[in-house]
Image (cartoon, helix red, strand yellow):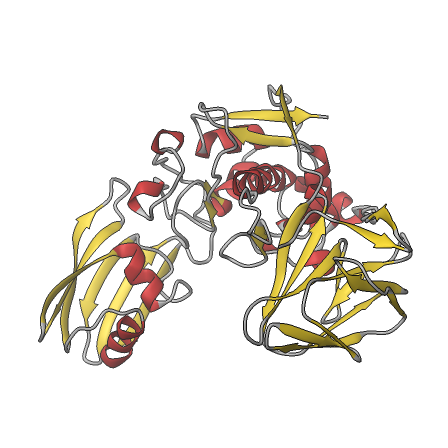
Length: 407
């Protein structure tokens, strides 16, 4: 179990301090005026009694392969439950084992904390720098989780450049900062058995640590510090977002089962994401390839003759697809079909054409992603058109409030 931890040295408990490196000046702002704030009226913020959590737990690695742990300076590692503190000035190789791992010459069967000694140093995992301390934990057979623990805004520094772009307009970056912060708050682990709050991939939010930080993105995080989206029920919104909506956003009930309240989302018309290079896309897929991908997803069909949209959502996406094959007709949700084919290939369920070709099937569509919540390319377009981050988030989440947590 991963606790928000202190670690014991010489028989006494000392807090595990996590130090933040000050952002470097954004010298690109003189050349890129859209990185400056829009000058719009400030957001009408209400301060809530809610306080931001001291730290966020991010799983940055889940692996069966050996990996290295090091530091930009000298670092300590020791069992979380207490024991001998080991100090090193060079990287240590970690080799997963059966419910244990070998770190350097030592074998561990429980969690190990790794933390820098110097306040300006950073832990490194596979040569990538991270602001927080990390916890190594054996999880099952031949697998190790690496979970970083760090302050909320330090985490967001490493999210924004990976989710959007470090050189995007500042108001779009601020909108993403608010949405990403809200997403974390809605997903903080409440079960003590859960070892982390979010992961570093598309199943949560893409996060790259210190290596991917950008001055403008850091500025956006700092200028929205403590701000998040609150539902009418008084809870942080399950703030979904995606790359490009293709002209209209979707509500979560047409995509997957979600604990998010249906009334917190709207299908919003959006003409601002047309600059997305994948606003319109095509995919050609061989018949055998298509059938095999469905099979891997647990959907067995015969030779496929036709695919058609059986039901559409209010935003014109494929809600249910009919798959006609030699073995009969099979209906499948559009989202499950997309996941089976591959979300990087079938970019969305906003399908505008499905046709049979000599070798397989031809798909055409618009947008990239599930379409729920904030459209990132739409946010960029809105910011370039002069909208403030408040106007942007209210456009995509019209029925929630932008608030600030208590200091």
